[in-house]
Length: 96
Image (cartoon, rainbow, N blue to C red; front, side, top):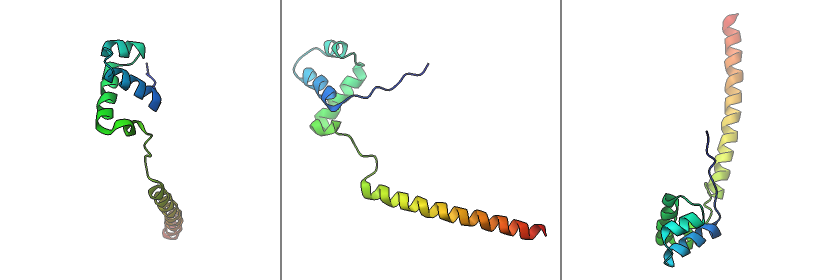
């Protein structure tokens, strides 16, 4: 059976972290938020390392890099179409 990954908002993560830092017992916090303790402790470590910035959505590929990659994909697709046509042409020539 597959388990679906839950996605948490920045606000939710901060609520958990602030309660942990505020002195509430970890077990109580994790039960209150129905959260796995490993996840809660990981968020706490991330918060200690980077503060609230740790929970900002991260862009997987920066905008310029993404545009450059998309341009390169189009070029490769065009090149691929040309090579397929050339291969078919030479295969036909060989069979005669």
